[in-house]
Length: 232
Ligand SMILES: Nc1ncnc2c1ncn2[C@@H]1O[C@H](COP(=O)(O)OP(=O)(O)O)[C@@H](O)[C@H]1O
Ligand SMILES: [Mg+2]
Image (cartoon, rainbow, N blue to C red; front, side, top):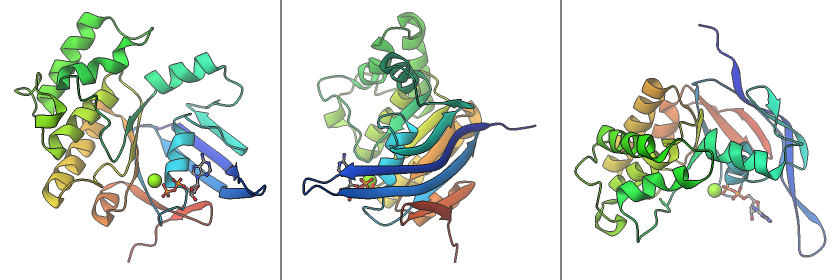
């Protein structure tokens, strides 16, 4: 099987203006090529720019230099409407904290991304949501509110929500950071199983060496650049 690049970062830089007048250069020359269906971990010290990198990969933010392409097409130059469509349909996000809506049930939370225009029709989305929640072991908790779910269960709901619009890329920012070791290992299992079953590529920022080691490749972000992780 020949695999094609899904997400490419070429010489990507991101500078933020400082209140004092200068600039903070968080990313300097970040390069990445993530293939279709591939799994890649990004590790690095706190403040090294990992979340900044994921935000750029998901078009929540734009680079100040360099180029980002998705399926061969540059993100630069797209209209805000096109970028919104990209964020809704091509990528799914998972954060350290689940960001579920407390007033909505598990099922309703999963359906939130399908409420935007251009998503699949609501009947099939609902069935897909139920199927996916069953797939992650939450078939009995469809009507549960986040407050009564465990941390691991909430994070599984967040994973399903991220996958509901069938994105080709899942971006996860420290997805196990708030979980105990058992729940963290289970979430790692789940992410890799879904990667194999659905072919969703994974770009996972993590402090967990264990989770990073389970991805096909691991990169370290340091001094604004991505390099292969030194595995010792
Ligand atoms: N929107 C922003 N404006 C100014 N500085 C920012 C912004 N976003 C991030 N930063 C700064 O960029 C650096 C990297 O942040 P971040 O990407 O969150 O790091 P990490 O996720 O690796 O801990 C930090 O010093 C942070 O304060
Ligand atoms: Mg971060």
